[in-house]
Every structure is written in C-alpha cells, then in structure tokens.
Length: 366
Image (tube, rainbow, N blue to C red):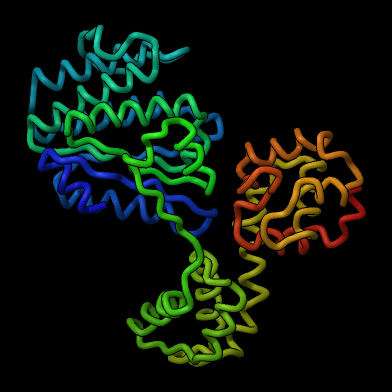
C-alpha cells in the first residue's frame, strides 16, 4: 500500500487493495495501518464503515466533505476548495432522498449532479483529485464492510476511481469485506482486477501465531512455555482475534508472574470461550429468527467448511427452494456467504462450534 501511495503522488498509477476474509481476522486493523501510511506520506484520509443498508454514496459524500474542509484548514487553498465543495454539494442534492450537505458555499452544478451515480462519482473523484494534485497532496478513503454495497453502487465506485486513475490523480480507495467481495467487484466491472489486488486475510501460520503471543509477552519479561503455546494454537486455529482473547485470559490466569504454562491455558479456556460466546459470537445472532437459527445449527452439524445447501435442507426436512429466503436472509446479515454455487459457509471463524454450544440439540428447533 505504501508503494501505491508513493506512486500516486508522483503522478503514476497504482493498484490499491481490497482485503477479503472472514470476520475477526484483522482486516479493519490493516485499514487502520493504511491510514497511518497515508498520514506519513502527506495524504488526507477518511474512513467509512458501510451499514447493512449499503448506503455508501451519502457516506462517501460526507467523507469527501471532511477531507476538503481539512485541506482548507491546513492549507488555506481558498477559492479552489470552495468550488470543490460546491460540486460536492450539488452531488449530495442529486442523490435519491439525499440531504443537502451543510456546506456554506454556492452550489456548483455540472460536474457531478447528473443523477447517474457512476458519472457523478467520476466527476467527484476528478474534482477532488485535481485539488489534491494541484496542492501537492493526496487523498485516501478506506471503506470497511464493503460487501454490503450492491453491485450497481460498487460499479459506480470502481468507475469513479478508474477515471481518476486514468488522469493519474492522487486519490484512491482501499477497502475490506467478506470473501465474496472479490467476486462482487469483478461482477461490477471486469477491469477492477487491474485496479485492485485482493489479499486474502485468514488465520496466521503456526510461526506467526506463536510470534503474536511470544513477542508482546517478552516485552513485558514474560515467557510462554512451548506446550502452552501449542494449547492456544489448538484452540484458536491461528485466528488473530481468538489468539488475542485466549492469550489475554491465559495471561490473567497465570500463577507465575513470568511464565505462562499449559495448566494456565487449560484453566483459562472456559473463560475465553465464554467471553467469545457472550461477545464476538452472540452479538451476531441477536437478530436471527428461529428458522435462521435452525439453518445455522444444521450447517454446524454438517461442517466444518462449506456445506451444500441441499444437505442443509435435507437435515431440516425441507425443500431447498423453501429454504431459499432463509439462506438469503443469513447472507444479507453477513452471517453466511456462498463460496461457490450451491454451497454455504459461515463468515465467522469457528462459528459452527459456537452454534453447537449454544443449541446442543438441533431437534428442538425442528
């Protein structure tokens, strides 16, 4: 990402990143790191988290407003900024049910208010990118939960960014989303693969998972025994968030202030599991219906890994077509995704194990 930021400042093209992976693997942390890199390269940056409604366009307009106001506050660009804010104001008015942004400038009609989102985003990216270029800076927008955006809006985003890239303007987007994001982006625009790379963020390999536990402890003069590390990796399967939770609980349970043992880990496992169940897992099931919970529990019974939708239906004694709305609802809620046609899998690591703990007996849901 740092290379991309440098190339854009030099008027060259650069492929930004769309991070994909399950929940809790560190995608948002990586976006935060990108922002730090941007700050070090003299960029202005803003962060967007898309909601389940997929409302990217108004959030993008608000982010651009903050960027332009920050530019003006730090660089006192004056009239050029006021024009860009006027273009942004017109863009916000043109959005369906879009509120006029609170900007005390005259509206500038023409570049980004046609009502066609792709055309207008292209005009907006160009307008802001030109301001950044002319004043020797750049703009980075990071977007989390990008999988919630529908294909049409994603297409408009890619087209807007593509136009700015054609003009070698120092403005770019880095995003993160569930594993379906790469396919959605390719569906939106075939040339997206030339604009982005799609790193897959997953569980850490054994050596890196151990390092994630050992290094912070060593900084505090604390040592992990090898069999204690083995136990944590066995429980967490190397997923970053789980390593963090199990590592914390083992540290708190340790009897010796300078050594964490396998016994400490064993005593901490019920505590760490309860913390994950009550927080990380449970919060994602709070809005599920009874049919959706039955579907998730059947998936857990068939897993781990992707399972066939037909097998889930058979376990629930239902036709696959009858369960289509339930399956689609779980995908919309980002609890599941479809890695291939006819398959379904959890978006949360080890979610199947949680479902078995939460609902030990599937038959009571049938």
